[in-house]
Length: 125
Image 1 (cartoon, one colour):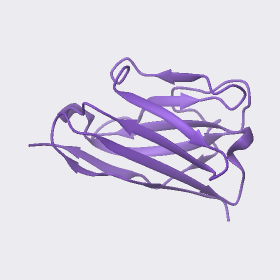
Image 2 (image 1 turned 180 degrees about the horizontal axis):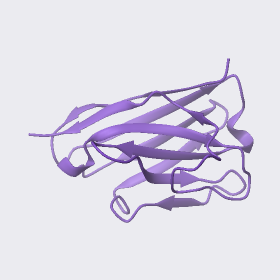
Image 3 (image 1 turned 60 degrees about the vertical axis):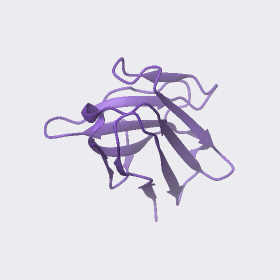
């Protein structure tokens, strides 16, 4: 069964940190680009992505310098380290897998075949 499962969300104070995990099962992430997205009330937006070929990354301007995407192919898991969190980072965070090797899309596209169920991140004092 193909599955992506996010974890690591929660409530954190402004300025705090969280690390989200996205564990894949039923397929190997080795040849998939991975994207992180978030959705507050409104549209789902791209946060970050990493392509498989060389680990190149993309970050939305709103998170650049604060968030870091990484992957551990041995564990078939992708991470999103979120530092200096702001109230506007509050959203449900999703990971998704895109079967492309040489690029990743930093926006929602039908090329993302697999999606996780999401994990809530709330930044509040």
